[in-house]
Length: 84
Image (cartoon, rainbow, N blue to C red; front, side, top):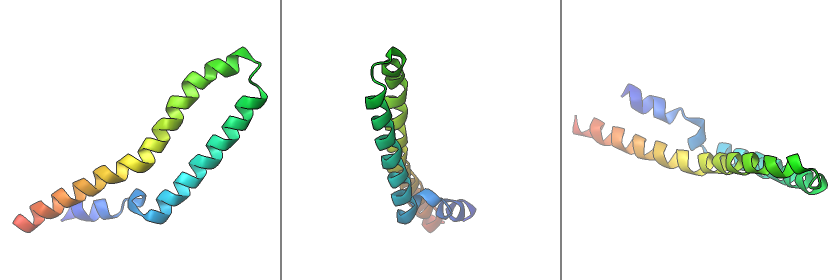
């Protein structure tokens, strides 16, 4: 029961929270794209894209994938709880 209460407290399962995070991600990505366009002539900017792009995609994956696994964890705990 304690585990179930803990999983209910995850903010990332809240739709409004995910919407806010996705909005922040979109704004941050838009600003980064503008900066990359403005400073593209610098070689180090092009190299930094190899670091920024995977990290940016990781953030997007976290926003969408983590809630899926947390919901599966909740269902598994509920199922165990019902069996008891």
